[in-house]
Length: 505
Image 1 (spheres, rainbow, N blue to C red):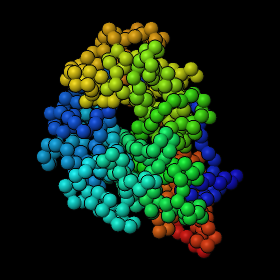
Image 2 (image 1 turned 60 degrees about the horizontal axis):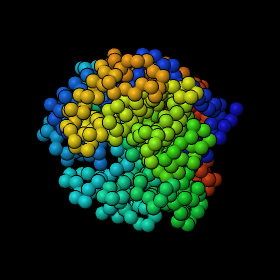
Image 3 (image 1 turned 60 degrees about the vertical axis):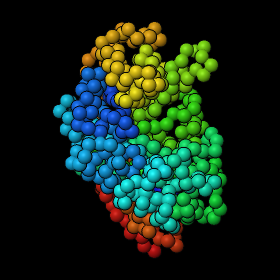
Image 4 (image 1 turned 30 degrees about the vertical axis):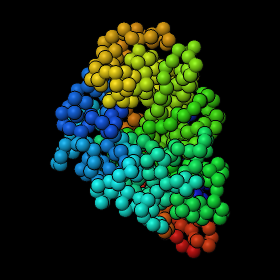
C-alpha cells in the first residue's frame, strides 16, 4: 500500500508505509514513577562541587530519582565539552565541569541526570558575551545577510525584552540548535536530554498572535515552499503551519539522531500550557500553545518524537472563591496531558515557587491521580530546586529551609496534605524510593526509524519514526523543474537507518 506524507515541505512517497499511531491509552502503572527537580542555573545549585553534593543529597532525601539540570541558558554551557562556549556564570574555574561532576555524583547515588537546554535563546543581556566564539558574535544581530540567525518580529524588533532568539526557520540556525543537543549526548553520559523554549517566542502584540519568525532567510524559504511572494501576517494560516513545522522538525531530528547515537537516552520537552484547556482533544488546535507559540506537543506525542512530555502546568492553587482561581485550569490541563500520552510517557510539571507547601502537595496528588478516563501520568517534576515554595520565592525564608520542609512533607508527614480533595492512600506521596519508568519502545523495540538527508542547498532532512520493519522505497519530488530523488531502504527494529538522497532531473 502507498502512503503520502509531507515532511519539511517536501512530498515524500513511501511504499509499504504504515502509520504507527497508538490509541490513547496510558502505559501500565507500577512502582516506577518519574520524580525530579528542575534545577535552573541562574543561581546557586550547579556552580560548585559543594553545591552539586548538596543537590544530590537533597534530591535523594526527597525520594526523587532524577535531576533536570539547566546546562544551557543562552548559547553557553555549564560544561566543558560541547559545541557551545563555557558559561559566563560564576562557576568554579576550569577544569571544573559542572555537568560531568553532576553525572558522576548523581549516578553514584542512583539518580538520573537529564541535561536541560534552552533551545532557542541565543543571548539574554544588553552586554555581549565575553567569548568571541559565542554564536552571538558570529551570527547575532551584528551579522549581515544570511549570516544573521536572529528571529525578527513582524514590526522589525529583534529581541523580546533583552532576549535574542534563534530563528527556527533559518536552516543554519536549526542545524546549530540540533548540534547543541547532539554535542552533549555524544560527549556526556546523560540519561536524558531536555528541551526548553522549543517554540516561537513570547512578547507578542496579543493573545494568539505569533508575531516572530521574520528573519529574511526564513521568509524566503516560506516563499520557496508556497510559491508566494508577500510578507504574511502573523496569523496567516499557511505561515503559522510552516513555522510550526520548523519547530517540529528540530524535535524530530534531535529525537532520531539521539537515538542513533545512544538509543537509551530519554528525550523530553518542557512544554507550554498557556490559557485554558478542555479535555476534548478536538480543541487542541484552538489552544494558545498551538496558536500563539506554534508548539504542537500533542502532535509530537502522537508521532512519537518525544519519550517524555513535561507540560509546565504552572498555576497557583487557590480556593474556588478566589477571584483569579487557577485551580480549574490546572485540573483541565492535567486531565488532557494524562489522556494524550499515546505510545510515550508524560509527567506533570508544577510551580513549587508559586505555592505554599500544602498547595504544592495537593497539586502533586492531583498529578499522580487518574484522569476521568482512568489514565495516569508517569510522575511529577517540580520547579524549582532553588525556589521550592512561595515563601522562598518571595524571599521570606531561605531555600534550604523550604527544601527541608518540602522533603519532610513528601516523605514523612501528612501535616500539610489536603487529602480530602483526592481519593488517595493516606500516606506520604514519596514515602519510599521509586525507579524511573522504563521505555518499552526503546527497551524492546518493534519499529525502526528513518533518517533521510536530501542534498539540496539547504540540506533538507526527511525523517520518519516508528516504521514497521521491512523494505521501503523512499521517493522525493520537490518540483519537476528542480528534480526528484529515490532510494530503497530496509527498516530494522531498534535502529536508525540513514539514507542520503541526491536530486536528479
